[in-house]
Length: 293
Image 1 (cartoon, rainbow, N blue to C red):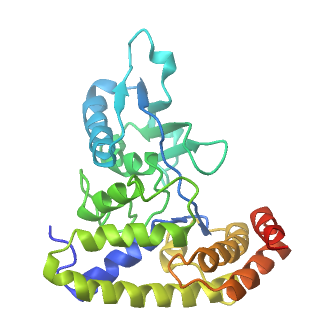
Image 2 (image 1 turned 45 degrees about the vertical axis):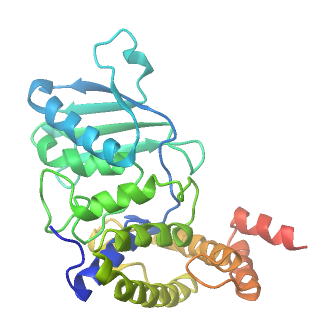
């Protein structure tokens, strides 16, 4: 399927990449990713029916990202696994969450280990969805991606999924990046995937998207705006998540203006947003402000 065959599709793609940076609780997230090999161990029930398909999903996403995957199931060194894939009885997970990925990290930069759980009856359709989460993409965008809760249900990666993975694990990306630092990397990868003739117009569309996103996030961080609609549509956003997210977004805006990420550098705006974040208890903002003194 071609990417961005029309302006509307390009706009949808840009929105999907932005939404991928939001946790369904209503909180914008930093980039987390694997910095070492993934060693997987399969466990649970009915593995004969699910292992090959799930392993193929894992191999597809890690291959796109350039991360080495090693299956240690049943091997003498299987206890060295840093990824557990567990197929559970159907009653062990809820109907509204038949599969889940837990990412474990000491700080929000590098994934140390992970645990995927999938119900026996849902493991086939969950495999690629959870494999994307495994790689650090925590959002559930509404666009054409296997991460979507909405209409796209396929057993494989879609073009936008591949764009995300290539950008997420590109040399320009690093663990701990804020959404505004990550967004240009993601959107540049999307534009690079287009035919050359479409790229100049796509760049203009991207720049307009950046400006509108910043405007919306000013309102959100100030307590007047809202999270992306996809977060609300998931039915899993929480008041605590959104409240915490407003403080995080204030910090992220401060960093954006400080570094010129997605927006032009502006020291006055940077201090304004960092001060707002600091008053909300954001320690990163407090540290940044201390460096100004």
